[in-house]
Image 1 (cartoon, one colour):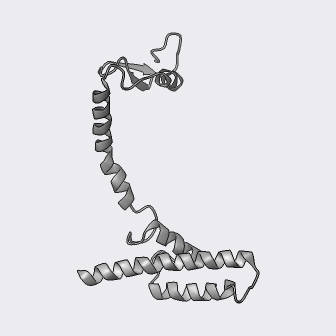
Image 2 (cartoon, rainbow, N blue to C red):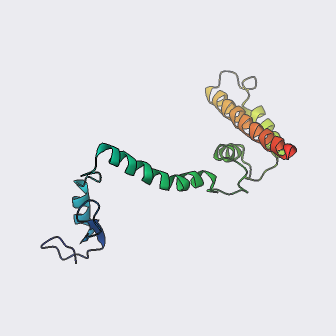
Image 3 (spheres, rainbow, N blue to C red):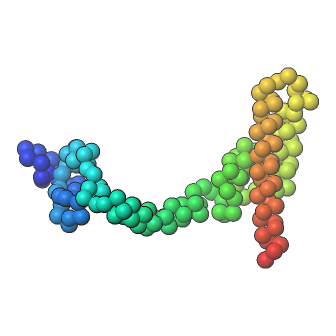
Length: 152
């Protein structure tokens, strides 16, 4: 049961009774939110101690934050960046498309919206710029992979 007097909800949210104490209150979700709204995590600590605790806790979580960068959040074999995957999507290609397919798709789509083909068309100009940027992102990624592969 919730440790808040008069509450009959399930007390499944632990909260410390005081800073740096192992003793816990067990509140329902509503009362835990109320309790935490006024909670000062650094109460009773000097400025230096508070800074050290924050640094230590941030340090313990840095590995997780760094690993999220390397995680494969989308399809593909993990060799392409998120920007490259977006560029491939813009070109209508699969995440594992070869660079020759990228070049072909870029040429085909760029011919359709090129400013010389559609003079004065603002939408076509924006589409052409987006295609150019996508191609540059993919070309740079391909050069990076080729260079790394050749240096090994």
